Amino acid sequence: MAASATNPQAAADQITAGVNPWVIAGAVMLATFMEVLDTSIAAVALPYIAGSLSASNDEATWVLTSYLVSNAIVLPMSNWMSLRFGRKRFLLTCVAVFTVASFACGAAPTLGLMLFARVIQGAGGGALQPLSQAILLESFPPAKRGAALAVFALGVVVAPVLGPTLGGWLTDTYSWRYAFYINIPIGVAALVMINTFVHDPDYIKNAKVPKFDNIGLGTLIVWTGCLQVILDKGQEDDWFGAIWIRWAVFFLVTSFVWFCYHSWTKKNPLVDLKVFKDRNFLVGAFLIFLFGVAIYSSTTLLPLFYQELLGYTAFTAGIAVAPRGIGAIFGMPVIGFLSNKVDPRLLLTFGFGLFGITTFYFGNVTLDVSPTTLLIPILLTGFALSFVFVPINSAAYGTLSNEKIGNASGIFNLMRNVGGSIGISLAQILLTRRSDAHQNDIINSVPITGQQFQNQLGATQGALTNSFGQANSLFAAQSTLYQQLGRQALNWAFVDVFRWLSLLCFLCVAVVWTLKKVKPGKAPEGAH
Image 1 (spheres, one colour):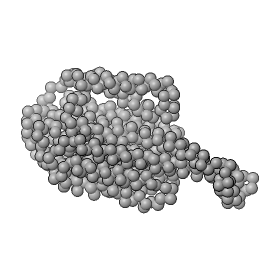
Image 2 (cartoon, rainbow, N blue to C red):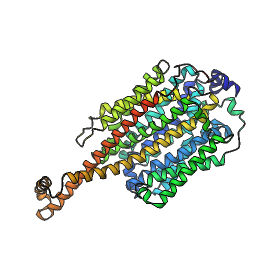
Image 3 (cartoon, rainbow, N blue to C red):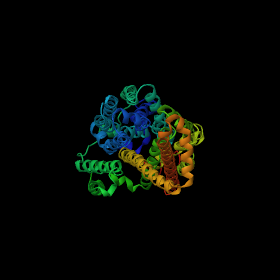
Image 4 (tube, rainbow, N blue to C red):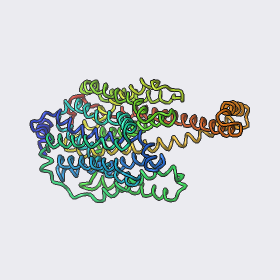
């Protein structure tokens, strides 16, 4: 452990064991790509999953959120489990569990079994990101970590933006079940590469593992579970109008406070929150939480907009948002070059600022947009994401020693996943509430008894008379106008949510400048 703590190059040599570190980067990136891909690949398939499993659209979103919650619970455990069982062995086990659970998700005949399989899948995938990130960071000396993180970002940034395209193609061409089956060959390849090229450093092999923190795990499960249930069911049960939600909020607050107090004061907690004493990590964790809200909600909203309002199929909706992944791919070499030369705060300002501007542009969508109307903004959004992920990791981990990275990585990824889960749920809630509000506004502005509405009703009725006959044309015309009312109200709801997301990004720009400056390409003072 001493070598790891005092000499980053020595620690890197222990992990690589003569293997090119870029090969190790490819191995862990493959596992990460598979796990992150699964958080978004099912997004465009949700209407098909709902129809196939006899579930409503709201119930189908549990397929996404149940995965994220299970994922979030396991994330902080990854450091203890890797010390107890060996990081390589634990990583291989997680990849295997994830791969088998993916098959179970694809084969699930009911929503209940699907959700159970997704929980197991999320548990298997929970540790993949922090373990992969810790291995990657320790495999490279500080001067090369920026370029390494740019490669790692291909798994974390490109996967969720390519997921809708791949998921849409598989759903339309074969079945939504293949959106889960696709993980099987990727998982097998990851198992082979990790087993061949990844090695544990001495501080992992010789670690003295503390007793497992049962209280820390129990309180973590309670508050994350309560949070997700409240977000998923609150809108349906009128929030605090339901007694059970009040109790759920009580248990959420109580368990969260207990978890924080316990994790801060216990000698060897499951999650060592004292890493938040490092200002850069504290600010970075807050930023990655907001980043999770923005990226996961926008990744869910855009395909939904194309499918629900414009009538796109799952595949064509995926194609429409595919330029985001292309933009991210183009951004990776640029950020890999700049990360060791430019202050991370400047890069983050550019990334969050550009993401905010493009998201604000999405806030001008109408029902008349063509497939190419949003091409450039979507492309720029992906490019902007590259300038967020790599610098935010460099800034957050830049002042931490190697032995703290495993615990910090679990917390960091937990913050992003909790943010993503909240973002997806809030996006659905806001769409429903704002759509209802806009529908009421339209009805008040254009009353049924008004001349404008009556003229439009008469014109529509006349146009439909030949198809439905004189007796049925009035009902058909009323239904048509009501459908148009609902589509317009929902369109304005999308506009509201996109604009609020843009404000969130501009808030992040201000938060960025509370970070301490980390000299690019150098190990910061106080870090080992």
